[in-house]
Length: 158
Image (tube, rainbow, N blue to C red):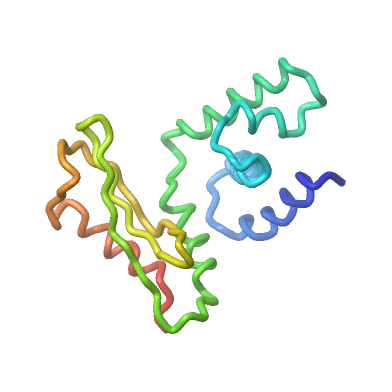
């Protein structure tokens, strides 16, 4: 069994209990997370090369198209899938304090990414996010208030 297979199986035991509408969506998500961890990049071409494809270049291109279709599938609700994962990740939080940061990033002076994340050891773990059609990184509270409410459901009570 390859290191990729071990990683895939470990992720499957962790992700399978979450709410998936279709098993094929789960299968592709598992492959993508394993490929992300294995390659250390978000490059679909590199992901496709490490996926099980019998070394066939044409098959790797097919895998890349499969990953792209999953990423652009409107029926997949990312927040519904992500919430159980982040909740489970934070369930055993041992530090007495949890730092949460609200961050905005502006793209092409047209879109604003609003992200709420837990900050730990110099890294951030996203809790919730949204992209707004907004020309500035300064966003009114009303535009992102729902993110705070949704994120509150992910953070352990104690």
